[in-house]
Length: 495
Ligand code: AMP
Ligand code: MG
Image 1 (cartoon, protein in one colour):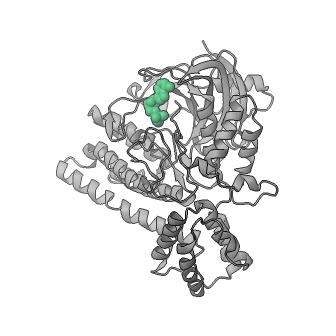
Image 2 (image 1 turned 60 degrees about the horizontal axis):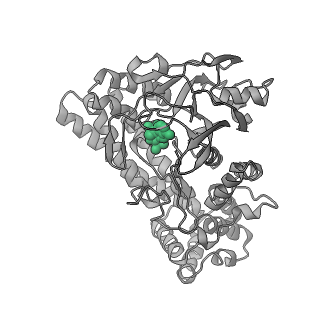
Image 3 (image 1 turned 90 degrees about the vertical axis):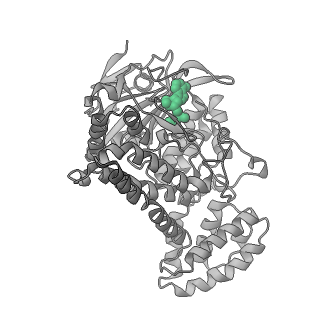
C-alpha cells in the first residue's frame, strides 16, 4: 500500500479519463530503502511543484513511488510497436508508472512518470525495474539535450531504491522521475489499430491534438491534421539530433513520441569522430539505427503511423492510402530542408547559396576521412572565424588533414558572399555548435563512480552540460574527445 503524501501537485489526469482500455491502474512497487541521488529543482519550480519543506527522505519516498502525492492516479499505459522492424501488438509500460499530469503555472500540461517502479500488467518477462546506470544516463543525456535546445522529455529526480536488480551482474535498482509533454507514441496508435478499435483511435487522435496541436483541433480531417503535424515535428527533431551528433540507438515506433520530443533514452550516444555509420547499441547489430539512417528511420516509422491512422483518414480505403501517401511524401523534402538549414547554421552561412549543400557534404567527407571530432570541428571553425587567427586548431583535429586542407579555401572564398560581419556570424555559430556534449567516455566514467557511491563526477557533468555553448574556464577536459580506445564503444539497453 502506498501512503498518500500531503504534497500538493496540481494534478489533472486527462489520460486517466480516457476509457479503461487505454491503461491499467497500477501501484508503484515499494522501494525498501529509497534515497534521492539527483533532483532537478529548476524543473520542479518551472512545473509549479512546491517541494520546499520536504526533506530529502520525503522526496525519496515520493520519487521512488513509496508515497503518492495527493491527486496522483497511477497507471501503466498500453501501446504496441515495431521493434527493429518486427511488430509486437502489445508492449505497454512494463516498468513505468504514470503518476498523472500537472498543469504548470504557464499553462503547459506535463506527465510525471516513474520509470523503474516495478512490474505492471505489461511487464511480460521483465522485472519492471531499472538499474542505477541507465537511470543516471537518461538523467544526464535528456537534460543535456534540453540545454542544447532540443525537444526532449526531462528528468526531475533520480532515486536509488535500496533493492538489487539482476542483469548480467547484480546492480543497484533506481527510479527515474521523467517529465514529458505526454507519453503518447506511434505505438499507442498501433495498439488500437491492431485491435481494429476505431473508436479508441478517434479518441486518441482528439486527445493528441488537444495536447500537442491545439491549433489543428477544428480540422476537417483530424487524423490527417495530426499526421501532418507529427511529420513536421519529427522532421525538425531528427535534424536537430544530427546537428549535435546524437544517435538515439533504438528508434522503434514505441520510442517515437507524437509530441515531437526525444523520448526513451536507452542505448543512446553522441558521436565523437564523425562517422555516418556510427552506431553504439550492442543490440543494433544490423546498424538499423546508425547516425545517418535516422531521417530514413523516422520516415519509416511515420509510415507505420499512417497505417494505424488509415481507417480514420477516409472511409474509402484507396482514398485513405492516397491521403496518407501524399502527406508522407512531405517528410523527405521537409527533413532535407531542415538538414540544409542546420548545416548552413553550423557553417555560419546566413546567405543561402546553391553550393552550400556540397560545401557541407565535402567537409563531412573530409572529417570522416580524417577522423575529426564532429563537435569540435564545427565549434573551432566558428571560434577561428571569430578570432581571425587562422584555422590551425581545426586542422589539429584531423589525423589526416589533406581533404580538410583542400576544403578550407572553398570555405574561405564562400565568406565573400556573406553580408554580416565575421564576428557576429562566428558568435551565431557558437550558439548552434556546442563545446560540451555528454561524451561517452565521460558519461561512463561518471556512472561507474556513481555505482561506487561517488556522485561528484555525475554532478560536475550535470553542471557543465547545463551550458553547452559557453566556454567554461577550467573545465576544458569536458570538451575533449576520448582517446582512441573508445572507438568501439558499445551501449547496452541496460533495462
Ligand atoms: P524499451 O526498449 O526501453 O523502449 O522497452 C521496450 C518495452 O519493454 C517496453 O514495453 C518496456 O516497458 C518493456 N521493458 C523494458 N525493460 C523492462 C523491464 N525491466 N521490465 C519490464 N518491462 C520492460
Ligand atoms: Mg520504450
